[in-house]
Length: 123
Image (cartoon, rainbow, N blue to C red):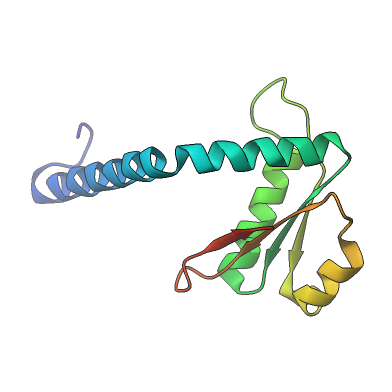
């Protein structure tokens, strides 16, 4: 690792970065086909007028849901079109009730849980 850090701290950071990179590679090797299929299904729904509804109840999950919704509405890749998305959070009342009010048949629902629960669900 170049820069200001040297010695055991730099070595530990390098080790953690390598472990994370290895975990990323293993995950995408194992899940790439399933992720590609989900992306294709999402594209079909967007083409039919669907929106992404990202849900989160815990503070961390609310942050994740809002972040994902913003990434669809304001893509960081120049030239990519925005896609309709809403971030629904627990402050607006029970998520089930919010989803019942907001969701249309072609919409995509992506629900985030806290890190402790460790899951993202797509419906």
